[in-house]
Image (tube, rainbow, N blue to C red):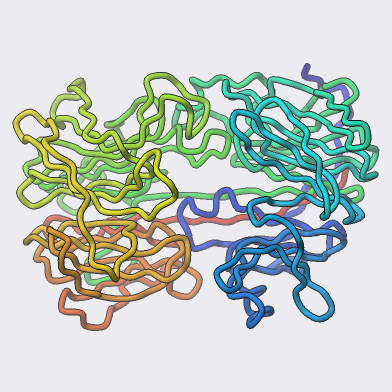
Length: 581
């Protein structure tokens, strides 16, 4: 039931902290977490920021505890501003608490994320066990399981430590808000049919214990069809829920995602994402970028240079990537837009940038195509593979080239147009590293004739992004994971020989491309606090920085004539706000 009967607060929201991460989508789900006493905040990425609260990042915590742990994987608050850290030490992961004499190990599984009671004596966490989701509650020494219907994706303790509130996600895309009383085992559903995000919710609890705060995309039961529309008005906003009646109303709303609410005393805190993507053109010799297509990212050139393709659609947390589609815009001889944007690859679920074959007749693309409007990224029926289609016929058959993909990367064509290279995990297999694959195509019918994993030399463990040279049989590959170090290797097309070209730093899906003559590679890497474009010769001379922009520049793609580099410009901020209740 929706109600607006409670009088609106006249207090004005106040932004108290801001971080500009050097990333594309990678930081969208991360949040600034405020401590229970409101004095500190923690951000689980190593970016700098400034604001009115004292902050820590994982990088700072690693430096503080150097010699005791090699890496901090996660940090959560317990009481006041006391931190509990998930750290890696001697190839083992453990939870630690910051004590007077350094870190003290806690007897908690590294596979859980604890949520602490206000007094720090009790904890709660969730674990998915088969088809059911278990909520565990108790002390560090002993916890008891409680079974809740749906997948638990948010946990918070009441201020008096008497109740644990939880949000659960149902397979149909609806969420529920529930309470559990550890002492009696009583489970109560407060409200059903909520339009919440599928992952990582927080629940703010008012000082009176009656009013709860949750991020929702709408005040209605979620409509899965709308989740797949690129610009549907479905940003998260903070809703106030009266747990006595189930009524709810919008408390905080803006033009972007407002999420991760928490209440400290009589103040409501939350995170806000400000992410703006655009395709820009940079002279190949370096310089200032100029706008080509707003609200788009990850460009690709048509071989004649008369069009670029891209991804468009907002990064909405409520449905995460379901709404992404592939578009195209015409270009004039000066690489200015000569038309409005037109959809090119559309359908249910995520579609990435179309990549033209060298003769311009085919487009290949990564897609999570699903036959029906699924409610979430991993919804039943979703794929994660490489698809092919004739470019000239919008209604032409969509050919699925692979059927094993899991987090498959965008494909790139061989110079002869008979093969595609891409990186991917394999569906249904244990955790593994992403590897390069090559699909061979019948260029008359578009049907795949084979898909084989490219063998890698022993020194290369994973490939994240790949680009095929337009002048030969070499493939450039970025080796790296979620950690900052990256390496660009140049592989033979049979994968049996590799040259290390450059090591650099990045925490984003930055991209790379060859110059048309095959003599250099353009890539995106960290320079200070932002991602910028660099060039490095195939012979391995030191890299040269091409841009010095106040925004992040990623996904470089060199024009067919070699005069321009189209790339993604990302202006991103993650902000911490508060409002007096």
